[in-house]
Length: 352
Image 1 (spheres, one colour):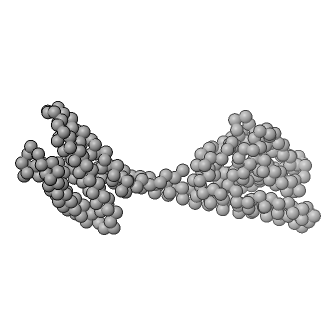
Image 2 (tube, rainbow, N blue to C red):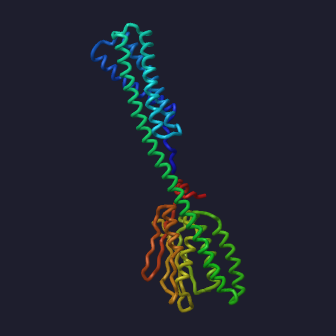
Image 3 (cartoon, helix red, strand yellow):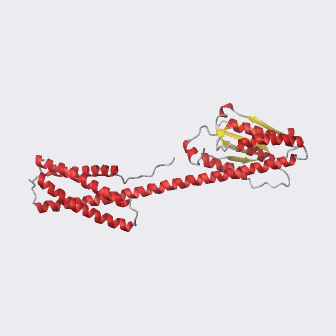
């Protein structure tokens, strides 16, 4: 799931930081006064006044530097505006607030000039704290923006790869179907006509633009495809189903079982002497497999395995799961069944 970019440069952030840091600084001052002398009433009023003025200074400095950060200009210009502006605000406000302190609390133990100097030093320290904390916030924000942009790029890349795989697989199915139809035309026109009728039903499923579907729907589609093939091969082609009913509502990538049946037919001899049996069966560990005895055709190119490679990659993209392929005297492909749709799985590839 995508995360929103971290946006710290707001008035709310300025208020929170101002209050939080002012509490820490004034707590330290309070502990110092409590350790060295009694807390008289006048001193308590002084501390309250300093606490409130510190919050005001922090807030104004944060608001100013946040505005500077959002300016559309070079970094050097921003740095110049920030330093000069912050210094001007700090000096003017420090002197003004010190004068206000003398008006409200005239019984200060320090001379007027010394009090101004002390408060100015304190306020310059506040300026440094504002600069350092803003720099930290800026670094965090830039990191979050980078991660956010990378998430977008990754999701877009996955979407592009997935669409490319779909666009590659659909012509692959069409090409093989037309080849089969071509073999029937002229040899058995009646069966060719029946083939076209069934093929139209099959294509309604393939153009449904689904990225995942229920196993029951995929089995129905594979059965329709098998009937197409039996028009051509008759009883020399047998497909056996061993399906646990509890898996029928699990999810699977569309056209996956059909693809494996198609590959078995394409790469193996099918004749009265060598009939081909394809088995489709679910397994207890939430998978379904398609297997057949290896009866390789002689003198036939095996192709590049585009369909199987696509199926493997689509499972990696959608579910981060592995399609297991084993080859002994039997060729077997085992596909994971997905119990339920995941929000993350659905959103990342741009699924519908």
